[in-house]
Length: 427
Image 1: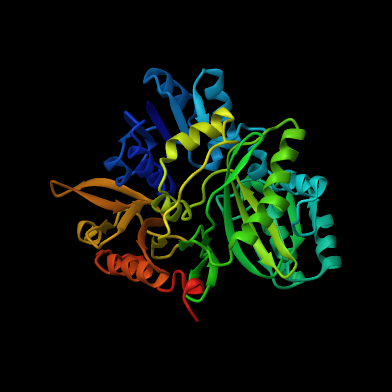
Image 2: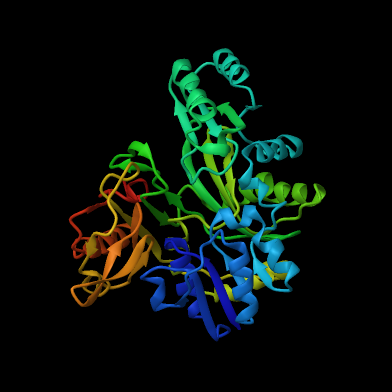
């Protein structure tokens, strides 16, 4: 098969790494890719939101199957466009992708089909939103309705902070059109976790659980980021919790979306809060998580490609995936200053030495191959730049290997957290 993966981050590198190993894959392309993905696939300079260019390329190269990594092209309707062109793709169409593209739509689905989540209100008027916050009290959470690159969520510790968040989103328009409508919701207390299921429109197949670290600093301190590391399995996800999440959250969502006339196909990524009352959904993403994908793919024993095709074809009912018992830990190396302003173009060295650490894979999240002084070097091209992943028989073994690799990478302009997977270590 001729496969095209859309995207250029750590998630897409992990997917390309897994797909390239499939005996079904004869030729693999990635658009736009990055310096690391170039080892697994032929990278093509087409942006993820250039839908015309992606469809034209898929037609030109007679692509058999497209795997869409990021959320923006899914919400924009890339899968619909590919279907019109007669090209099969993994991922939801635009109607189903509203589960991530509109937090208001998502929350309304939860309310209609009895899916446990935080109490909420939807607002297009700033004064009404502020009145709701004043009445509800704090802590409280204010979110942009639309996509904001993972940054449109503000946890407010006081009513004044809540009002300021409304002004930031709807007045200053910090997140552009994503803040035309906002969702204000109850603050949930508990332990966050990530749960993934492949869905074929009618059936859902659970993957393994994972947990990521959203805060930029050790001890889960500092501002939220797109994810500074992850680990799998997550101790909080025992068999009983998985069964409960499937029964109370995933299965009703799949049935609800079908009833709404927007059957979901692809991967459902539920960001959960495990509260004293049980699991509740913070949000849905309609694609693999990043950096969670970087711990899921190394733990997968089965070929990933047939599973993705089965989801697209509506054939998951009798499908099964096998997983390794190993633990996987990913440490994200980011550019200094992230999640604020940061420098691009800095040189990263020592990657070859780092990858010689046993059971280590380095997935590139924001890199570029650049010619400097007549030689090609890897340079940083984003905020989150590398996902250093290691597997091991225990959490401690995987964590130790990951940091051994990190310490061999020479990149003065980068940083990482030093406590990834601390929650899973024996206490």
